[in-house]
Length: 432
Picture 1: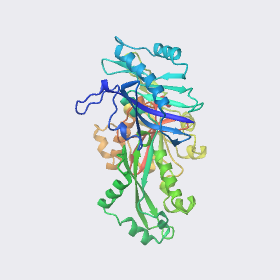
Picture 2: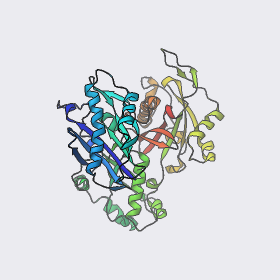
Picture 3: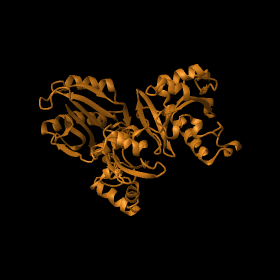
Picture 4: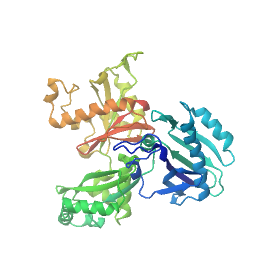
């Protein structure tokens, strides 16, 4: 299958004001980090339009675009830009789609458009997609072009992850624990930065992350040493706890002669999920929404209903585990009920929220009682408060704070926050 995902720049919209990127027709430095290898293409059809390709492949193998494909793309994109530039006011999706279907059906079909966005003067679809009839690319191809940088940053789903392990070769983890400890401490912070710079290979990254997991001596379990795995993430979609964990597991197994079972025995947290699922009861109101006034959620929940709700959302956990470890609490934000359960893989058998935060009380940070909780619990409670507000209105493409990420599990969208090496996943209201 041929897949093309690219951004179409138009020089008319370039904004050279320091720190300002036009929301139409200009691509930001951050967006340019979303792939290591990119193509830059122009066509004689328009000297003002340039294509930056982030994905250009056939059956996942990268390819260069042919002239006829570039011309096809620029022809269609030029129509959109010309329509925007020449329109006196708004442009309409239905009108654009009708024109595309009527005038470009000789070489393209199955057109679709994103929402109309504006820079205050011009209006244009945030993205356009279609299938090409070009016999070179074959049937079932995917072509998608973005024309708005904010939309591209939120919606581009491609990513690459480069792993920088604590040391190499990885099979040295199976030497005596004293040797492992020596190798884990061999690199100074300066050495680590040099290794990260070398791994970049002159490709600026979107995000750098460091994941820490404990190594446990299989013969003397009291010997526990932290291991740090650095990651270079290209593309915002890669900042996802499930994607990152899978990338680490794939890297380890691809660069080791030892089995998954052997690795799980010495670094269990890397291969198991240490997390809590938190499902707010978004659907149960005490005072419903009104036209000019937000509703208030109900703090009163039937235990059977709570178990039924979390079981319907958290589908991968065994029902017996959910029934035995689910806890119900509430949060002062709009009197919201929270239903929580830990993963069966959690370290130290911490399956209940009270196993980690026995002193949590549902009070506002402005309450005098807030300081009666431990500092650890206060920090987590502040994170939870921030996450609940975001999760209430979050969608798949909503911008979120930099200290959080998103993930999808079984069709449920979650907001993810991390505290003391444990992930907390709050189900988005839109998914419940």
